[in-house]
Amino acid sequence: MGRRRRMAYHGRMDSNAPTGAAGPKAPRLAWWLATGFGSGYLRPAPGTWGSLAGLLAWVLLVRGLGILAAPWTAWVLLAAPLALTLLAVWAADAVVKETGLKDPSWIVIDEWAGIWFALTPLLFTVTVQPQPGLLWAARLAAPFLLFRLFDIWKPGPVDAAQGLPGGWGVVLDDVLAGILAALLAWPLDQWLGAQSLLHPGRWGG
Image (cartoon, rainbow, N blue to C red):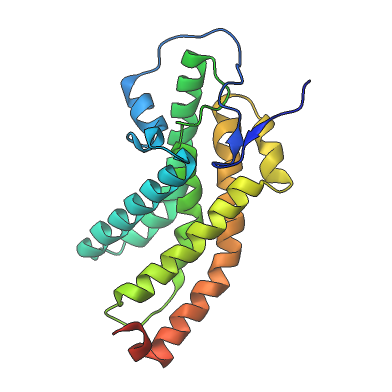
């Protein structure tokens, strides 16, 4: 097998690598999901745009469920990355089969799933309330940057996951990148939360 090429600016395999002949037409919902509701068509660096769109969707989900203040909302937020991963695998697999492309750059639902895993540690941090905008921005920036680092770098198992068939190979490398980012973001976010409690004035609160 020839050497795999990567498009470094968005950290995925060459979008022109074919998987074989085009297959059955994917459902319209699969296309919407696979492209991150259109965010995958933004240029340059569609992977980064897709990650930003996924981050925004996560924030809206957290804020929306926060308004409900129901006891089950925490479980929904914890289950959301896994549920999104399963949807992402289905959508990516359907689109890959239709197009015959292994991992087109405009499929970014994998970035959505990965960034949702990377952001999950933020749910466990106690911060000053109400949370200042500067603190919230700093807490979001850390997992985002770490996720993009691991998604582009693709160390060890992250790179190996790309060899899985169909939608699994499209999505699981980003999920693993998100988990690695979460492991580093967790202690950093705990530190930011502690600093916000000790020095609330520094954050404009």
